[in-house]
Image (cartoon, rainbow, N blue to C red; front, side, top):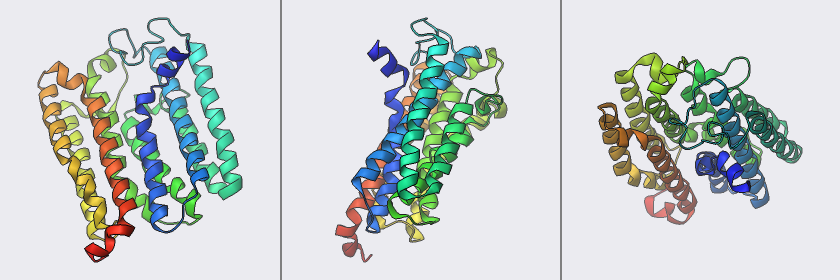
Amino acid sequence: MIKIWFMAMRPWSFTASFVPVALGAALAWTEGSFAPGLFVLTVAGGTLVHAGTNLINTYGDYMSGVDTVESAATNPQLVTGVLKPASVKRAGIGAFAAAAVIGVALAYLCGWPVLAVGGLGVLAGYGYTAGIWPYKYKGLGSIGVFFLMGPLMVWPAYYIQTGQYSLVPVLVSLPVAMLVAAILHANDIRDVVCDRAADIRTLALNIGTGASLLLYYGLLAGAYFCLVVLVAAGVLPATALMALLTAPVAAGLLRSAREGVAGCRDKMQWLEANTAGCHFKFGLLMILGLLVHPYFGRWLGQ
């Protein structure tokens, strides 16, 4: 049963919350501020919010009729009857409550903005597919995730380490925010048929197949373009361009998306997972670029 609950939290997706937290902390480290204990607490809090969101997402998709045995291959716990909806909902709320305890501790140590941003994350995580206005079903899922797992994770991770208000972590978050939005958008493209049958409106359904494909292209290409612009503008050091090493992976994703929309089911089935892999690799290399800059920056004239 422990394994069932662990898998219900979709632990493979936690890289999407680790990357922005680590990115904010790495940015703070380049400025001479880094407390390992605060970093561990931030990662734990972000992961708990993510786990709670995943559980409530499973609950909401099941209750709305979106998930079926055929469509919920990665989170089949409710459609197969292994877990009960009420139990999954309680577990999701429990994860949010645990995150709130960490948030209170971090707010005590670092300041009230941590609790304000964390509270917004919890509300948005619950409201993704539950509550009075589940915004995923209004076509706002990918847009919400862009902000929630981009600026609203990088900025507080930076603030917790430095205690400083700055626009820089918001700007630095944009490439990974685009890629995490691409993950959700890939999921929406893949699930168009099931979502239409369930009578919900995702962004992919609202704008149509052709525009959805173009948006996916734009999110991936935009992440790399934004990274180059940030380096050119001096917001990021040149060593952050290490993330460009993942460009061939992104090019493969663009081909997979095109082939998937054209009817290749296997390509479409794995598009979300492969996009998540690209986000993780890009993020890690971007973080590594920040960490090595103090040692190699002088060679680059920075």
